[in-house]
Image (cartoon, rainbow, N blue to C red; front, side, top):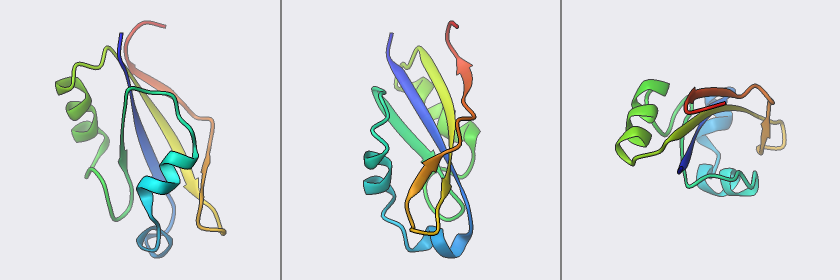
Length: 88
């Protein structure tokens, strides 16, 4: 079963505008077949459209994770994961 992750980036728009999202997400070393993200200024507009993209890519398991933008302009996972689709 393929796994997809939706990473919801939370924080201020000002910090978000100055971030290289793809690089910062890569630094988190998330294990998934496909990763999409939402943030205040970039990525998908909402979680639903991100989920829809993963469904279209045939992901059997979809997990929502949250990451906060830190003062150092990096991402820190909050640990609040939610299984949106799949088997526990």
